[in-house]
Image 1 (tube, rainbow, N blue to C red):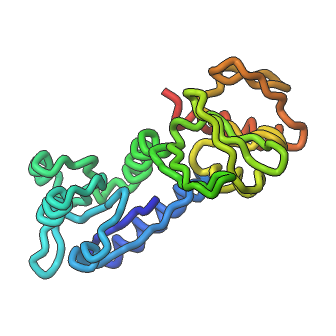
Image 2: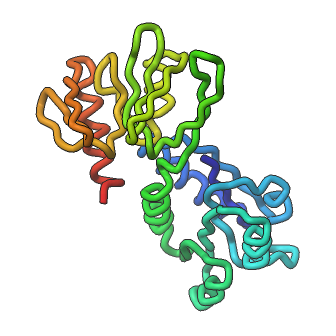
Length: 234
């Protein structure tokens, strides 16, 4: 996940970047955050998932022009325009603006991030190597759980597909944690969005599988689950 800021005034960059960093830290979201003082430097490495873009930049640069270049390149980057002039927001329909943030109301940054991650947090592809050495493409939104299977890890997809791959479950749990997965017990990592029900000692997934909540992991799992429900569950 890469979030970028294009803002020519240092005073605003120094407010916006820490606000995004704090949000990601509080929500346990792993993201690279880069700030630029001009659009030209950003466009040299424009592979971003979310862009906070000032409409009025120095040296004759125009935020709408940068957005148009991104559209023409086929980028799927979501753009949040930064402005001190709300009347300029109407022009954004031409470039499919995701949000407008009035610089006088910095709390709107958190609101934009909430909306973005609600739809994007599991739109991620990972690549794994199976036991035969083949590269396997895993879409996290379709991954139901990961469990230990001997010295391997078993990845179970929602449609029943199964992949056996190398890896350690503790490291895998840490890597998947920012994307809505929780280490429910020493043998299982589950996708929180597919929990159908739970009680103090057990969860049931949408496929009917019941998994005991490990005593060691109980507190952290319940914290993960209720945070997920509060922030991302429709």
